Structure formats: structure tokens, C-alpha cells
Length: 61
View 1: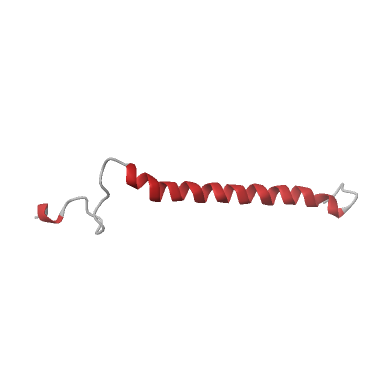
View 2: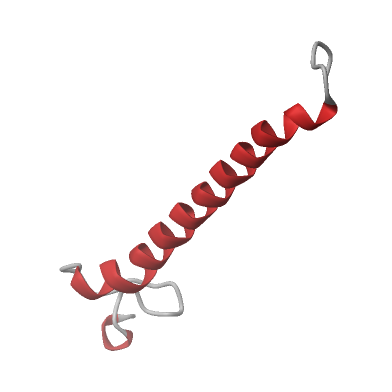
């Protein structure tokens, strides 16, 4: 980096950036797990049928 006396002075900045990226990734993973696993259990409407239709099989024409 220009203006730095030693190239090793950039190390702490890179380390902080790597830690921040890692934490963001962990937060994203936790949020995804919550939404897929926990939220589905507690929502009031049943999930859609696996074939993509929102109608039960016996009500189709």
C-alpha cells in the first residue's frame, strides 16, 4: 500500500476485514437456519404441497 512504511502494517486491516466477513457469513447462516427450520414450525398457515400447488389433491378438478 502506498504511504505505508512497512508492508506488514496492512496485516491488521486485512485481519479485521477477514473477521468481519466471517461474522457476516455466520449471521447469514444463522438467519437462514432460523427461517427454514424454526419459522416454518411456528407459522400459522400450512406449507404448500410439494408439487407447487396450494390446493389439496381432492379439491382439484
